[in-house]
Image (cartoon, rainbow, N blue to C red):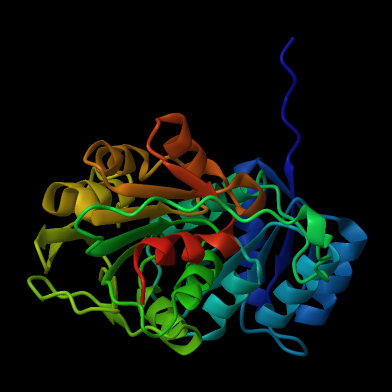
Length: 348
């Protein structure tokens, strides 16, 4: 006889009574969840997480006493738990900070002023998926290995003719990983960077602003037909795929209803492979699903250098795993070593 799956245990953190009640109704009516507790401020969220040990947390970012960013930081330090941020405003700067602190993803509040009916379904589906993600303690003191235990990572070999563009893709856990890589490249990095990061609609400008504030490279929202500038990072606008439109040019393609992902890492990597061939480098970082595996394989088949983040440093190993399993990856590296691998091919 098949066992019936136990309901997922959720902690709801929301200071608005009406919004909190709406979220609880949605969760309860679905039959897939049980609300084990509620909190109306960040400090209480930390306390209830330690007491109740929920499988997933649905948390607003704007909270009294302790905001969602600080609460995320404390929870990930003391009791790592999957956290889904729910927000009514895409302009809240602390959202991306909270993603960097360890929250898995951000979605629109169901029933908010600018929401649509699909937001309720997205809310339930996202919590269900994220409840199964294994998360680890963040911000713990790092233990340095003994000097005899250190091993310098094997660096990729130089590409004849040189690398002309870097294509980078990430999903769940990506903002912090992307920030780490871009910061490691330094202010003098000479290549344009085409970046695909899966994120909820309307939150791309907040991601752009955060990366501009926390990395040394200029970060732009791409415009169709514009020429790539050295050392600039390009993100697609909401609702568009980011592509290499020709050597030195950007192309944007409007999303279609049947697209699995938007923006798509596969489409980015495939377009870069066709335009630049062996003169490109593709990097795939933490993320859920398999987006990017086919495109990265096309890059490798055309002689490009391909790098994947290793499992130990990923928040979610889905995208890198899929790329490795399809034979798309030439080099696997820990997150804090990926910039070194890139710079080995692109002297600055």
